[in-house]
Length: 387
Picture 1: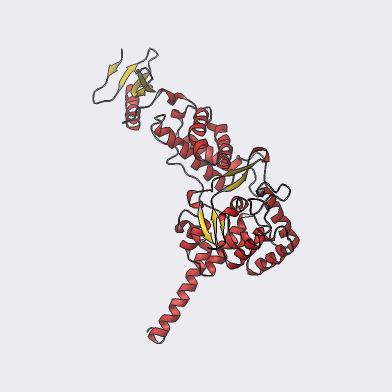
Picture 2: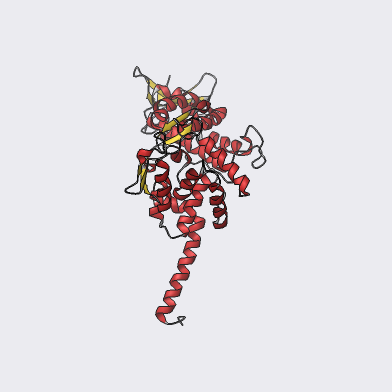
């Protein structure tokens, strides 16, 4: 017969096979009956420490019967009830790719039984050979940034499970993940930027598009989603409030900007405003940059990416990504004296500190220049070196 221990130790009993087991209440089923957490040991002395650890782990917790579902089942519910109603479709698709990686290792595990150690082993495994196809740069392992992204998704999903009373605590806490080991930003330097400008001048169908990009630093989906109603010629401003992405099967999707701060109004350089003003005189529809083959549709982001690659190759320029045009704009803006807070607003960053962290390589040089400037005017002030 079960015997209740004093001081809230839970219930312990000796089994018919001679082993000892104990139980604590960790929640309730839909009918009000108890959910138990069981621990076992060879002897009563070995059992008591295990039971005490379980009591501490589940103190103040009241789990539901659904805590018995697998991680794979919880992922599907999380996507349906959380992700798909709050996130952009493109973001959800990316998360599903990460979820597939996680479910390969933990998808069939009961969510309430998944441990920090199991998650850590999964991260280590993904880092070593998580890639289905061997890549020259990474071999069979995932990049540091991919492992970090998988961790951030799993942490968020498990945190939602805590709030839903499926688990007592988030098992991703305490895991070790790779540091932010991102490669240096690739940009076009001053001479390369001059070559790029000359190259797009030879592309009449694309000149306005890439000139606007290099002078505003818009995200690829943002520039493809611009409408004439977003342009205020009198004020010289451009409103960014939507983004175009490639959905399943290549179908274009019109959605929100990447973040809430992504919705913004920026002031255009005089040269960019002039180009867009002249372009508007020949506009055929609502889109500032329509699809070249289907003008009633917006520019396809994939088409813009492919065109950039061909322009770079023809001009003998470095093979950069489309997003690197954004980095090019931001880097030259900072080095030209645009302050981080203003640039943060132009780029649609959450805050200025993110901008500074993203462009540390630039701000370090700016700090050196600032030190030289301060040293110069202090020398003038005190009349020479201080002795």
